[in-house]
Length: 260
Image 1: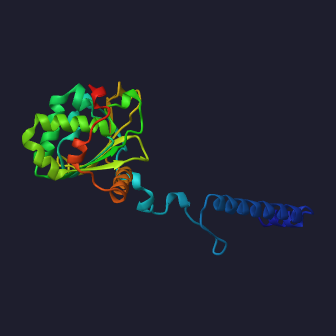
Image 2: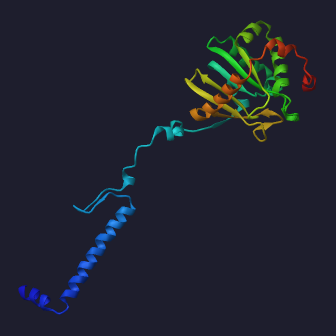
Image 3: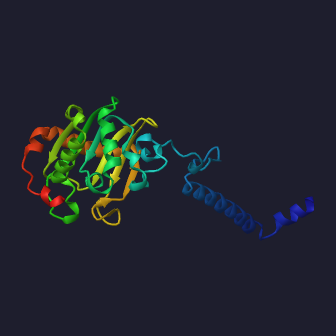
């Protein structure tokens, strides 16, 4: 063995071989450090150390930036005609923005009338707040929306349920919005059944409605979406005065005769 080592050392090519081996080792070490840095690992030159990848230890996520993670889904789609109880079993304050009254007036007045009656008789509901958009559209498929549709519904509802008028006046608050930020229809309230705040969104265009009657509702429990809805209610309620129901009903209706 000693003779082999002596032969290698005395070889004229030994310095070149040694330099080549050292060079390859240096290149390998530099390459490993370079790859480690690219992978985001912690690297120290002395003592030599390459730490774990940062991807294996991700930083904690700030809950403020993971808002949607609190909800398993943002929206679920519901057939209104098969689930009109979506509008039942609320408590506290019930909010309605630009509702369509065609379902109550034309499509299924009996079942929907019961929902409205129970809403005013239920002691768990404190207020029913409507934001009614002024008649900003003359589209034929909008004739059961806006102030005209609200007048017709309320007039018929009180006529059919004469003993409930005082309850309605105690609980109902109506606000008019002449320059709406949205022509959508949505509702917000707290459900008694599962103790959660729920938002219901209706899109007033085909194929989500048919002949002016909403047929699909989008239900959500997403806090951020509901918060945006509530902001719109708050903005209207703070910028305009509450309407007098007596004045609304006594005001001559210019187009109600065309709704029959």
